[in-house]
Length: 428
Ligand code: SAH
View 1 (cartoon, rainbow, N blue to C red):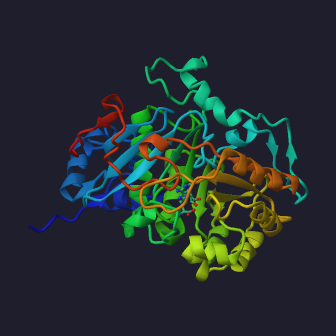
View 2 (view 1 turned 180 degrees about the vertical axis):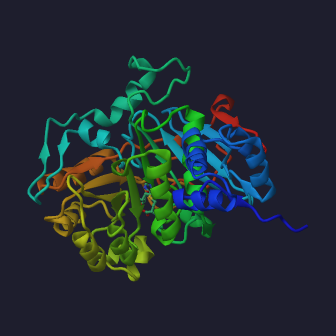
View 3 (view 1 turned 90 degrees about the vertical axis):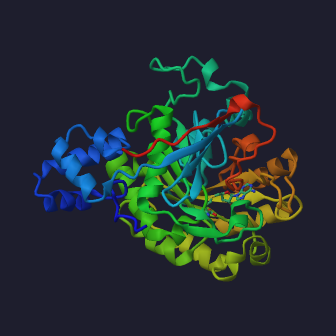
């Protein structure tokens, strides 16, 4: 059977929707009505766009236009409140999207100023040493010890215990189905890359999660990180278009979004020139070329020297800094000597470092270093004047933490109450 040609509204920008409206012979203001319905109201079907005349909706449907909303196929809820969504698309492929309520405080959520403020970090704007206000040694545990429902939240009448009430929730989105980069410590790498996501599929993840959580930016302050499955800079056009749609359509501010890259150097340079762009995070993960090539084969093509040159030349905006992520692999890259090398590499850069103790997984041949070892690494960086933070793992029990996104559906240890299967709603 030949599939009818379809066109999804989700993924179209203002100009594209305006063109569609024009071609249909409709007045110009219909474009804004469609933009609002798709990105603000987050409708799932044309029938729900009640601002449009019935006749126009029917004509759109007849010409093969769909909303193209993403479908939540499964949902896993962690004991720490993190939710991992399995989100499916029309061709049967799926990706994972993670919701981290109440601030990141976790390793993926670097887009949050809140996480930084919580630790009293004042970024240096001049390349001089960053300042630390009284760091709270227990900040990382706070969220686990006092989950938000015990903190007198300002919930507006909903029963969702983890609802974003203080505007610090973070969504972690995927950019590809699987990943081609082959980092040796990452479970997503084991999938290989199946395909790129379209801009609509990237934004669709965000819309589906916002809707499910009953939150709406900009009233609810949502941070967003492109740190799910895939390498965003290897799906460059769609990723950039998606970030524009998230700003213009969905209403998430640029400064609340961060993209993480394994180090696709030419794309980092191109990205710096974009008018609308999220903040930049770079997965460093090793302190010298030999080590980095071993754990991240992509380093053969784009060496540390090339990567650091791109980082140094990256055009930062006012009050912006680059984040470097560093996954600590026990006995491999977590020695004091490695910390000193990292400090050398980053000297003089307006940046901060997020340390992530390895999240383990089947098929991953590395170990998680001890808390003491991680703390020593952090101490060496801080003493060298580099702001360094230890990210609290989020949702490890449901395979939602960094590097664990592998579309795992058998989470054997989960009680039934934490595993919810959603039956997909048919479009229209
Ligand atoms: N491909 C992009 C986006 C993924 S972000 C990138 O590499 O940056 C995911 C982050 O999790 C990266 O910083 C990555 O280094 C880190 N990560 C991967 N596997 C991990 C694991 N098993 N434990 C902890 N962090 C991991």
